[in-house]
Image (cartoon, rainbow, N blue to C red):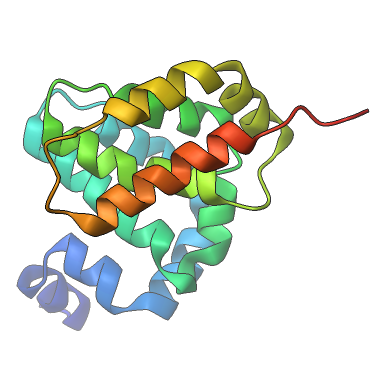
Length: 163
């Protein structure tokens, strides 16, 4: 058994992707299109565990500073924002919560692409209302409440670019 096989056997894919950060960042950058084309299928899965764990891992990956280039590329694509907006409305509160952690990166980014800004502006009133009522039962989670309020402010403050 090769060393890589042994490591793969002993570690979960999530461990591999979150422990070897520099190696993974380089690999993800070099293979972005192929990996994320397949990864999107996991996010569309009908299997609850697959969908939730894939979202959770995606959130961890794009929030890691080693993956800045991956995050930048991921949040520049309108289809990814649309997917996260749909997952925010999933029937499972846990999937909604994991989607929130990816969605917030789109909104909080100071360097949004024009298509991302357009989608957020087009849905501005609906997003503000939705987020205002989103998972209100999480009253004990101060960080979540702060992040949600920050996103509402960011969306509210979005302006159409002047030509």
